[in-house]
Length: 330
Image (cartoon, rainbow, N blue to C red; front, side, top):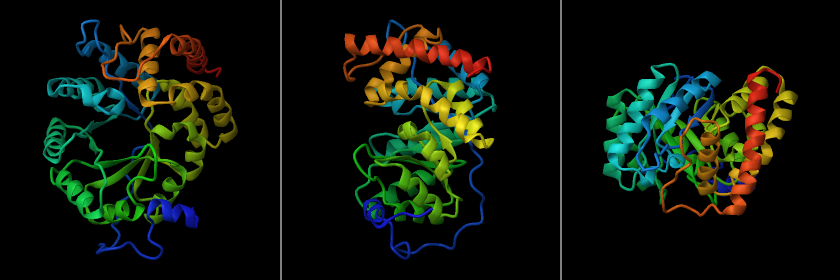
């Protein structure tokens, strides 16, 4: 897995060694989390309350489809528009429903360091299998300090969300150094532009010991699998994603690619913007009878009549394809 010089510049990869003091590489194996980890949308009632029963239905449907885990709350959960009480309700409901049958990763992202620490401590005490945190990157010193503050809450594992919708995100050298020196840091969720070279760079720099997952770049799922990514964190379409992953890992790359190409028009529409994705997948979940409404919280990007028309056509396609996959004919 090589990275060309352009990618080295874009991602801040050291040409020879990681800068700063780095402990000898640990001997721990890669985090044993493989497959599809669903980022759960938050279901709202018509009165704008979190619908815990709808969330339970969603968890049961995802488990039946074969997902390996859940991330809650995340950006797709409209986390920045949830109250503290609602965040607690989401995570506790998922933990109760999952009952150890799949990993539960508690989302601890927040606007300040003390808030991130508080949520990480809360999810660790609640029994989450891991904690995810997104931390804005200014420089190595600031970022490393913020990561270590969260790590001191002693989660079973800490997953860093490397989110940058317009660029390369946190430098690879920085993520590698934190992996090698902070025992809790076991995983990185890569969501940068482009994601592919960074997947490869992180895996190569850590000998595959760092758990690397993909999220927003799921539209490049086959490329990511070719690069060795361990898990994917999409929203919805559980049976389809699980089937693609299982086909690929069973050595049936062509069949996995063919199924993936059947879902690509859906992803091309849904992934044009995070807000559109939230609108779309809630509309899909409502059409499937999992959520009672497709309600979202403002402020969010508008979803107009033209969006709705295309979305409904694609939702019909998605539902038909999922039925085929579940029946073993897709």
